[in-house]
Every structure is written in structure tokens, then in C-alpha cells.
Length: 415
Ligand SMILES: Cc1ncc(COP(=O)(O)O)c(C=O)c1O
Image (cartoon, rainbow, N blue to C red; front, side, top):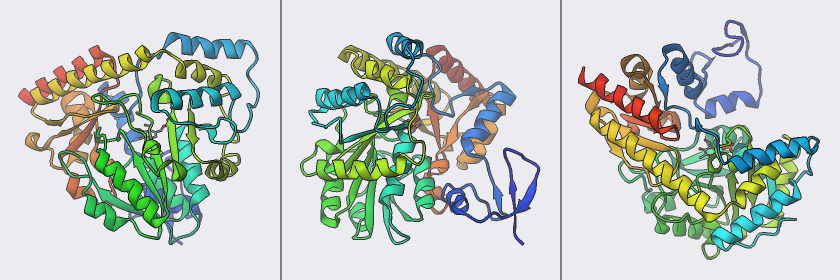
């Protein structure tokens, strides 16, 4: 009988393969190796390397500073006032109202808080519940841009559907429109777009967004957008796809409080869209987590109602941090692709001998005292070559941390 070894958790035990959807999930996420070993994610591996070596961790995207004081205080107050039991299945009414107000205020979108929104355990649950709800068999396809956030491939595999990837060009990280059109067909159930984009930091051009809507309409597909970096676009206000002509009726818009308010551990996300689609997502979501985060939900409502200056300042500060990181990376010999939004800067390590970015990143903690993630972690195995040499660095850290990382990288490259 085949055997699988688990390289994490109870690390040293072997057992017969346990059949189940988890296997294709591991495979979809690129964690199942040919010898049957289930590897830890690269994020876990690199975070462990940071702890072991004392390296500055620019791997995983979480801020190292607290978010707005009034939001944190609202969570404390909610606990003190007894918001400690199950909230309603769709979410706390005040948060539902705040999400609807936010979509109207920033984007002019009208959303009915009673029927068109569900609060979820982060954007991650919104994505997985949506994919599980809408996929109906192995011939269904989900089209994503590649590189892609790692949960997409795992969730599509869990749902038993096919992932169809459209490459983002090296350089501007926009897709080729003909390639996009060729990838969408009547088998396409979902076109999943993350904008601003992790890991590349790209913001998709209006042309690309229009083409997504055109193709979705032509093939009767649903557009699912992951907009967790909506308030961290640096050059122009964010454009939700749902605001494009003809899009709202077939779009589920997903976001989360984690990045906007530096509360990634609270796991408060949401999805909004037409009531019938939201009913489908809620039907699955209620048997995944049912509900979560009752004291955090009213606190996120406070955050969503903060003045415009909060959102503008957060984006400006993050852009400044990216600038510090980019200067350090250039001084160390990387070729930097400046991001247009989000937490991450992508840099090419080829000139530093890093054509194999995974090997380069594995050596970087010892070599330079810095942890980063190879872009290959966000690419299906067959396409890794196309993104060789590219490394993702998180800029969502304190300025002194970024300066320390920059100086370590510069001094390691001059040695
Ligand atoms: C593109 C993207 N989508 C979703 C998530 C997950 O969001 P959440 O923590 O709200 O589940 C992340 C987190 O890094 C992300 O980068």
C-alpha cells in the first residue's frame, strides 16, 4: 500500500494513504511530492527559517504594527459589553450596514445589507465557500491569473474542478488579452481576479477588467474578485470590477479587514453580490464555520466608517515603505518591479545568481539575514520556469525593520 509521510505536525510518523479530498487539495496547492510526502507550505518553512536564523522576516504578509486605536478599542468594548456569543449567520447587522455604506461611499455601489452580503472568516473562507458553492463537477473550470494567491489552487482542487491559468507577463504583470480570451470558454464557471494583485503588486488595466466582464458575459461565467488590498492602491483609486457596466449582476466581490486595518489575525472578511449568489455562498459557508469573530465584527464596522484620511494615509505610508525596500533591493543588486498596490514588492535576483529563486530564498536567511518567498510558490509546477529568479518581499513592516533588511541585503551582496 502506498505510504505518505507528513513533513509537518506530527513529523515523524508514517501511515497508509488516507483517501479523501485532502489529497487533491495538497496536490492542487503543490504540496504533494512524487514520493508521497506532504510538504509544509513555503510560508511555514520560511517563517521557521526566520526564527532559526534570526533573519528579518519579509516572507509572510502580516504587519508588525497595530492598526487604528479606535478599531482595537471597539473590539475590547464589544467583549466588555457581552458580544461573545454566536452572531447572526450573515453577520452582525451593524457590520453589514457598514459594508454597504463603505461600498456606496468609495465606489458608488448599492448593496442591500439584508440580502446581498455575508460576513466570513476572512477573505479565505469567502473564497473557498464561493468556489465550493458554485463548482458542480470535474468539467467546471476556474480561470485565474498566474502567479496566484496560494489558496485559489487549493480550493479549486478541493472542489474537484480544473484550474485554468492565464500567465501575467514578466515586467508589467498584465495578461495577454488574446491568451485570456482563449482561456475562457463555456466550461468556465468562475473567472477569479485578485486586484490589486498578490504576489506581483500589479493593478489590472481597465482594458483587462473590461475583457474579463466581456468574456464572463459571453460565456455566462461568474466573476469572483478578491479585493483585500482595495485600500492599498498607490497611484489611482481602486476600481472594483462590480462597478463596470454589466458586471454587478454576475460578480461576487470579496474583501477583508485584515489588510485595511492591520488586523490579519481577526479573520473578518465578507462577500457581496446578487442575492441569489449570496444565498448559494451562505448555504455552504454556514456549514464551514457557521459564524466567527462576534466582538471583532462591530470593531470592523468602526474601521469601515473611519474618515477618508485614514485610508489615504495607510496607502501613502505603505507606498513609502515600498520605496525604502526598493532602494535597499536595488542597492543590493536586485532588479525591482515597483508595485502599484498591496503588501509586496517583486524583485529579480538573477544578477545575484538567483535564477533558481527557491534555492536563493532557502539560502538567503543564512547569506543575508533576510527571509523572502520565491514567486514559484504562486505558480503551478509546469510554469515555474517562466518566473525564474523572481522573489517576493513584504513591505508591510516597520520602517526600521525594512531599513535593517535593506542594509543586510546590501552588505551581503558586497561581501
Ligand atoms: C490576495 C489575498 N487574498 C486573500 C487573502 C486572505 O485574506 P484573509 O486573511 O482575510 O483570509 C490574502 C492574505 O494574504 C491575500 O493576499
